[in-house]
Length: 270
Image 1 (cartoon, rainbow, N blue to C red):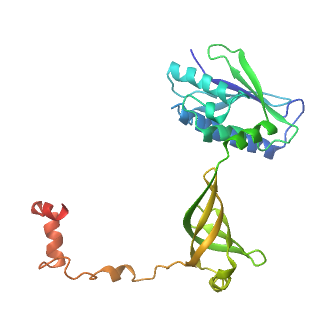
Image 2 (image 1 turned 135 degrees about the vertical axis):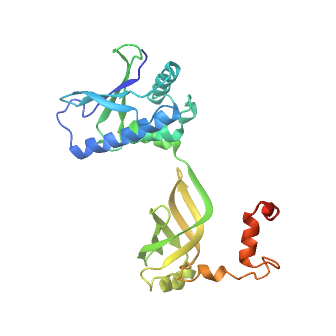
Image 3 (image 1 turned 180 degrees about the horizontal axis):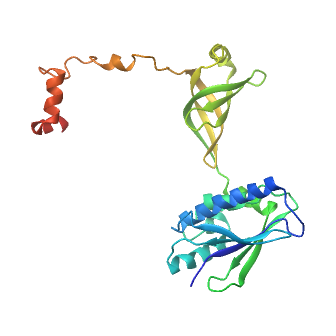
């Protein structure tokens, strides 16, 4: 029966590994295998770790979810591509996204500069090792550099000012939607306006300007416009009622709603 199994070797040639580093590597590896499974249309929760060995810490990551034999065959070919040092992001096949390749590189993010992670792919029909490679810090950075994309676009966000740096006209804004910190720069001519907004500690602001995104993440925002966001007050919603007294024609609101709900009310919805 076909199967997909990979061996990881951490802290090669050494004994023991800092627990925090082990947890970080495991977390990044989990994210990668979930994304890899999504690309291959496998169950992203169908992974287990077993066959642990002491010393350098060697263990297997095995897929135990449901699959079709051809899918496992594609998974092997895709993984061989990902671990091939001659492959570039543009060479990826079998539905593998560049984001997945980026996450593969992230597995080596917690290791030290002189360390590497041994990765071995088992043969899909036997328990023998098919090929072995090493993911080093240098290789990880090379993959990220190949994928890295910077996009500059005009846009905006809403959030709370969490820090203000007077000397270089910088702000930190906590995005209300993502809760991420966004580093912003504002022009000197709006300095007084920014200072006025800071007088209230809980002011929510709307900002518009040129957003720099790196790999989809907001890296910086050059503010063109900033003002306080309108805050909902009790009774604001009720102000909408009666704003167009002729909306229901000769009918009362109650009669109009009754017409809409009746079988004869379809004409109002067209």
